[in-house]
Image 1 (tube, rainbow, N blue to C red):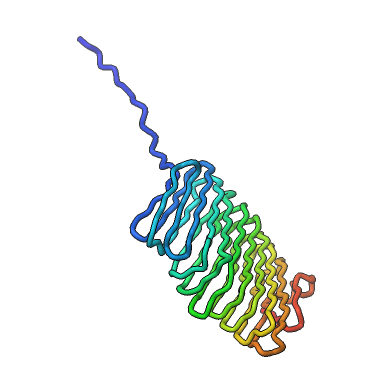
Image 2 (image 1 turned 180 degrees about the vertical axis):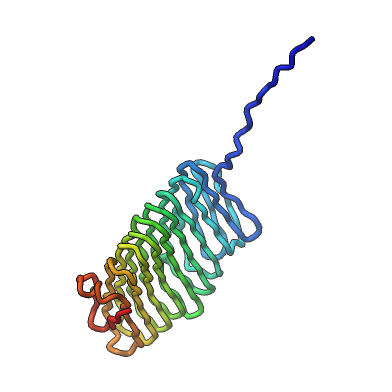
Length: 273
């Protein structure tokens, strides 16, 4: 009588490797637990080239939506470069975890169409650097960076004239990040700069240099932590000679003011919660 001997086979690996794919008008990157390098080159008219590590380039046309997700434990280095002024609308969403870093160079700006950039940093300790340009009368841009339980540093710089519409936002939740937002240019349209902070102990610095000849609207607000402990700065140099419409405020606690954690120029209203 033959004796039954059970056999156990090794299961195949179910881990999904990092990938860069195109589906319709969407280009997507999905990271894994490894460390990867992703380089994106965008011509501003919907044509993109993506290079993941040493793999063959992914070439795509008609792209209106880009999704970059690096949340699976790896520490990726991601770079996105705009080579010409934007003439087609595009949405870019970046999600970063662990120590992943993102460098976005969008300095050519937007000639026409609308550019939406959103980055969500979840438990991230890496560095984010964003360089934005001007926005012409028929264009618009909104850039938002959200820190959730993160540290590291965030730098958002916009150098260029705004004749259309542009808003830059830094939002921190339970984070100790060091955030900075800088603008320099002539505003004949509408430009907004905002920073939101909650119960973390990080710092937020907004510095605006409004150029001579500005006749548009500029609004800048820093909302400090309601618990105090964060450091907030709103520094505005207005060279318009009063021809622009400037609205600027810091919202903070009296405790933060008393502790010397609030810094502002004389054209900024400081208000307490």
